[in-house]
Length: 599
Image (cartoon, rainbow, N blue to C red; front, side, top):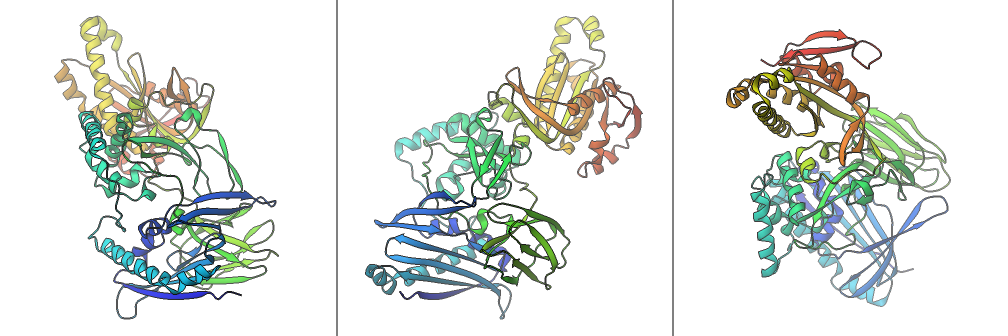
């Protein structure tokens, strides 16, 4: 049997493991920075519903083919990755990375152990003449870059050559940036965005997430989203809708328009079917347009720890085996499951001892508490299994369809991006604000049609400006009324306060005497296409409209659901609202609500 060659290298960091883990456990980014080429992945379904992953690629002209096994890890402790080759000079290659606190002071030690088994004589030569020397050089160089990033010297963990456009390409790019900056949505971010795309790792460009990118570029989140939407129009970026698997969070299906996004999908890797949910698993992402930078197909690493950062632990268990490792999880909602689909068990972790996760053929159970500071697993099945512990909450920096379609810039720049006729997408929460003018009929009689119409049109612009400033979108106007949508109830209430507080100045400027009525409600509804634009349908819409009917003008009426939102309570209470109850038209029972003056 061929000998397996191993080497172990160590780097001492001055920072704790939680600081350097996100960079070193990002195996795709690490491999790209080390100069490894992309490879192609092929999924092969198995009779039990699971899949096997096979890859092909080339390194310096040498063709390779291998089976890709799931990466294993416990967050902040270790990760292990190995491949078995069917073509090329090696039979196996594996890497184990472990962390431990330093005894000589603050920081941590990172141990990198790489092992390889030759498959051919050429493989033996490679392993004995330079393979491990290059592995050590790459490890030490990249650890040095991570240390600079941890110190704040560098903005990103790894330095890569980036993309250099030709002179002609640069001229076209510069022209597109000028057009972007001349638009209402440039925010002075066009050149910053382009420079980042040209310098970034390819790993970062496959799915650019604007809310995650904004803090890196020092941008306000809404400004970043607006700039990227405008960049699509100018030809710098392309947008797509990703339908994410609720387990691995991978984008198993993607479409360039909402009308081409299916209502449900299947994730072969997790062996689960799932449905489209605008609030949870439909995300708007971006990638560079070819005119700015080509992004080539392939993977640097398919499944490292930071590819699925919500997964805290993923470990292989032999049949009838029990194992535990050091590890602690932050408090929060978790799910225990088997990697390839099937049953699961959910639990809330309060920071104490974790339950032992037990896998059986058709069940996942939570057993006795693990020893303090340990994560424990047990496989009661007769076959090897992969156990997973993952957080159930979704990323807060995802630009979900619910959030994107409630932005003014999206409604302005992507008006044609709608659902198919007859299709409806559920939204678990949206805040809706209805406004109307009090006494508009008298206004037209007293002021005359032309002056009254001009004042009403100016008031639409005034409302739209406030809605945009509060991360909302005007859905439609109906006569003198407006329907606006917000992803967050607090933004809706803050917008209403700003509108009412600014009406005196508006009326003085416009030489008018308009009085605005406002009603706000939040809840679930259905997104539909109506009159070629995205609209909302359902009881939440009806109740928001009826609450606006209760407004006397100059005040704000909002529902119990709005005030109950934890992000709203402080703002609502500062308005000293009064509690009322009334029967509303079209609603079967009396509805309690709150009325506040914005003065």
